[in-house]
Amino acid sequence: MPEISFYILPGVSLQDRHLFACRLIERAYRDQQFCYVYTDNHQQSLQLDNHLWTFKPGSFIPHQILEEKPPAFEQSILIGTRSAPDKWQNIIVNLSSHFPENISQVDRILEILDNNEEIKQAGRVRYKQYQQAGLNISTHTL
Image (cartoon, rainbow, N blue to C red; front, top):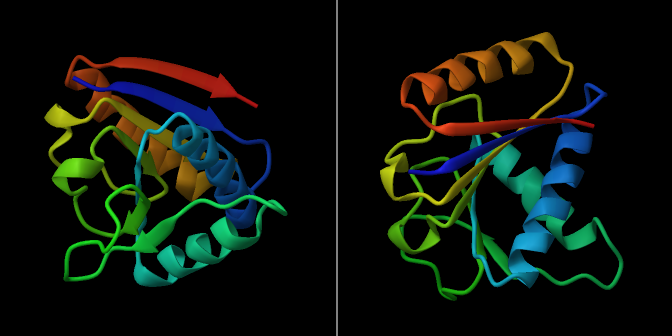
């Protein structure tokens, strides 16, 4: 069963959530943990894709948006709106407002929230779902 970590950011900016996600993704990649970033829609996936290219000068994190066909390069970060594919279930970075599917095979889920009331409310619902599933949850207020 996965370990759940909630990160609560002080602002209300989607860009701040994405930049924080980029730092977590970079750390995971450097530790050779290839994660899946779960987003609400294709537009959000494109925004995160852009942030991963530009958030830090000199940083390179191989990544791609999950399309219908299998990823071209297996040791990369995947971004998408569907369930995490089998080989990308070590870490899920959840930027969506939904509870991730098929979490029984996931090692860690990183939830990134901010002070936007809608984002916090969706996070509270997921928190309760994780609690009801009997999962280990930690919260980090930044």
